[in-house]
Length: 196
Image 1 (tube, rainbow, N blue to C red):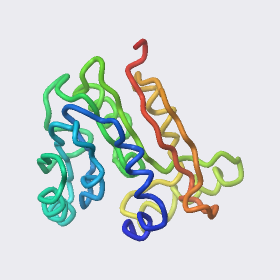
Image 2 (image 1 turned 135 degrees about the vertical axis):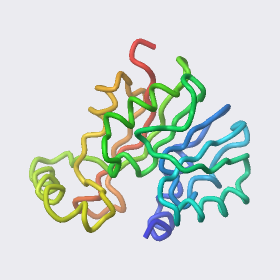
Image 3 (image 1 turned 90 degrees about the vertical axis):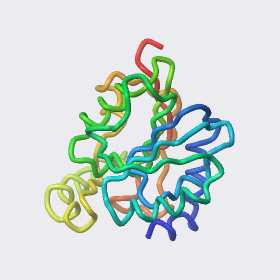
């Protein structure tokens, strides 16, 4: 499904997510490594965290062909295997919808981020219309997480970033792939520590 989404235009959004990055990057929930091919040459190293063994094995294969050095490790968003203030950028791509504890995952991102660093994100989020947001709430409380690997269609990720002490600096909301469904509302952006 992810490959079909990439062919439908999500690959371009992945490139936009990673454009201009440099230094050390921590990618949370790297999945099968679909982002690796899009990292720009100014990135010194990517530490890619993936908890699921099958996806982690596929990410290791993708890392071998990446244009920048990528280290793939086991780990979860709520307990990142990285030191305090050790990375320039934390990347979340289609992962904050499914983490067990979104607040803990974002607190960990803030912990490992250098003071001048940023969080980049590409996520599907709560709909902008009340009717669709209500439908997302019902689906998330019943069947959707069981059908989609723990994914929640209607999380307000931008508000969660703000509660974690991050200020969105760039924010683009869009419907993908252009057809309105509970899981088609997306946000692409970056955030920095509040007060920066």
